[in-house]
Length: 75
Image (cartoon, rainbow, N blue to C red; front, top):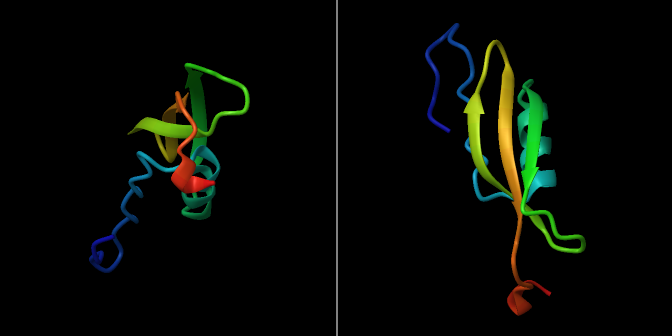
């Protein structure tokens, strides 16, 4: 993240591409409320953040989708 001027609000962390659980932890740790919409659900697959946007106040909307295949490099 870039440095902030004294007294300015913290910058919204960019969590696009992160696993949902990781991105959720980062945003909540930065003081944001998170709303998530899940698309392309497939049980057993990892959920990744596809899109994010800041809504009113400190609420962040996440669009989350499941990966289509299992990457053998991540096993």
